[in-house]
Length: 110
Length: 113
Image 1: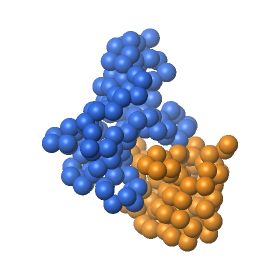
Image 2: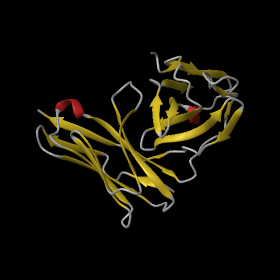
Image 3: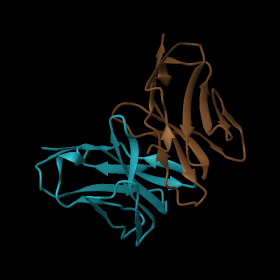
């Protein structure tokens, strides 16, 4: 049982590049979300999805796009990376009120 | 504006003693609270939760207390063990059922052997 799998674990991007952070879960959870963790800021919600085809914005959605075509996958897209998006990104899926997090993607934008 | 605050960035406790981690919130609409533990290079893992209809929830060595009038919750770990050394986040959500958790900034606990 893999739980929540995030790829890649590490990524360095140049300013202006685009990329997609992948997130997959095998628990058949309807609810998934993306957070970023920055020093002194805790985890902040970027986008979330309550089921396939349904997404909504969290606290800090600017600069990020998401889609949810299947229950299993919830990719996060950075269209034009900026240094302010340097962070650790966590994907989570929820069973009831308990969130299961992936191991994170450490992204550096130079 | 930080709706969930953990004012102590770090805490050191001797092994076997009690660890008390505190969390304050400002949004009176929050009705469900959780604690997560995070080790370096890993994702957060769920520890314990409490609904606003309760004032205490216990799970083994971990107890969470909720004081709604003070908008304050605390996590007690008794006895503390070196393996408890981690960053602890509290999180809260509103009654909307959207599971939009707001996290605090975390407290780094170090349990000294």
